[in-house]
Length: 229
Image (tube, rainbow, N blue to C red):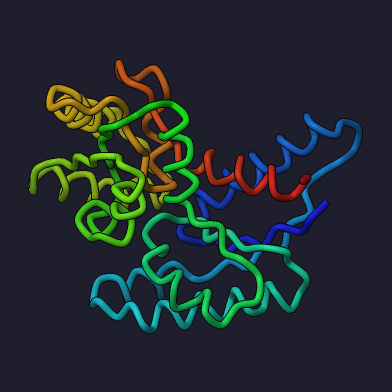
């Protein structure tokens, strides 16, 4: 079994989900007392969020690069960054790393192509929804990406940072998310990407009438496949 390197803490709420998913998958596949071989480096999310807010992506890349290099030195065979947004800095980290970073958007695009999805709604932080670093991984595979209106982008982003990242799950926020998703479905979305690793705390498959693509689970599935290959 290969050793999975996780860069977590962004937020720690979603890192818990990664850890549980990976161990559940290994246990059910191999049985007995088997569990995933994981090395976790958990960063201080406050430092990362401060960089995001002021647009200092270079500094955030250095923080995550330091974590990735330590995971490599500790024996990880590959790395997962346990958040969607910080995949913006993957190119800066990967160039100094000798082990691969498994890109969450590329793994998600693989699943969408397998399912025949041509047009998809994307919810996530405002950086993930509005910048090219994530969406281009989808459009390169022929998938059209729909995002909410400006007000919707701000609402989705605020719920992530002010509620989900601190463990608060509110019914009124869920209802508004469902309303936003349904609006994008009316525009032709054939599915919805939960493009933030916290959104699965709020939205589940079955909450809307189109398939829900949980990037946390998709990312963990890819890591599991690589670990036991």
